[in-house]
Amino acid sequence: MHEKKMVIFDFDGVIVDTWWLTHKTSKKAFPAMTEELHRSGFEGNIYEWEKTLTHLEKRDIDFFEEFIKETHLVEFFDVKDAITSLSETHLLSIVSSSPTNIIEGFLEREGLREHFQDILGADVHESKHEKIHMLFKKYDIPAKQCVMVTDTTGDAREARLAGVDSIFVSWGFHDMGRLEKADSFRIVHDPKELAPTVEDYFAR
Image (cartoon, rainbow, N blue to C red):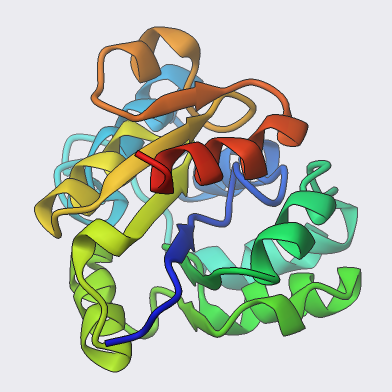
């Protein structure tokens, strides 16, 4: 069994500020998509939710082909120090609904790729709890030695299916109203609080 603890990061809304681009691209696919409707999709698995949108007109576009056209405009949240610090004592992984190659491109741009052992994007599996189980198996690590850092209640729900607790960040896709209704260890409002909160979680 691995001695280190694992921090599982969501990517969009936690590490990179992609809400504006995610919504802009979704509106190209679903012209009637409102921000509120779109945010509600992240209360569960976004891919499962999209299958329920049969009442909306859908245009035939490749979402990520459109998305990547403006990724050079996307900024990172101020989490570099937290990631660097946590990587010194913990295993870090990313479990995301975005494709692995897009995530790796972002991380390489900011010099952060080396801090993550694994990046499991949508191309690996659309289910986040299934990808978390893959990490358990790879590292022979139990759920209690892992925590997920996310900005959405849907991620917290998928992590819980795998037996993993979550730490919410308040700068992402979901507002405080949504986050406060879901179970989490803590809601973090400043990136400087992130690493100490993870340490608090594992010190319980």
